[in-house]
Length: 155
Image 1 (cartoon, rainbow, N blue to C red):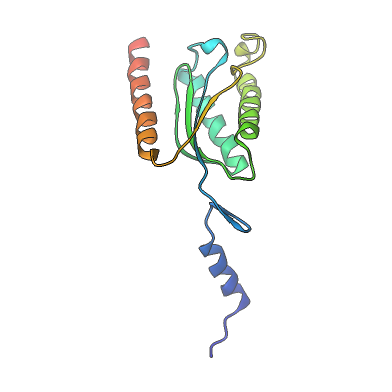
Image 2 (image 1 turned 90 degrees about the horizontal axis):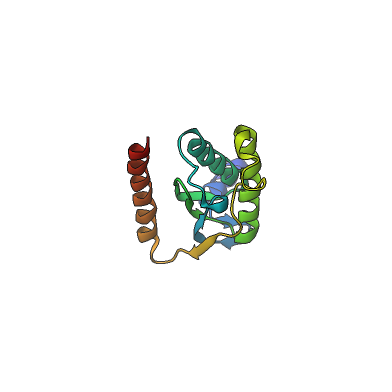
């Protein structure tokens, strides 16, 4: 009989556990979320678009949310995300839209007085991703390509 050190047992345990698990829970909660700027203004291009993308990534990472696919379009944002069951979609969206608006206003103060100090419109669209995950991922990818073409035409 061979002795196994306590450290090697702990290493094996952590390698078995993946990101999609909590203490006694395995989960795969994936959602397709769409939200828009206030008054659906067509403002998210250039530096602002890159900042919005970076801010959303940072906020999702902070909350432990995996972005499976994402797209920041001129007048809306598409996200395909995995949200842990300990966090409701509405709580996450309140956090994401609230914190991102503050961070956007810090980086782009010219947007503070547009839309009555609200960057995002009220509400959002959410759908669970089941067997149609590939369809949604392709839709978001194609949305990005279409927006890039539109950006080139407008600039």
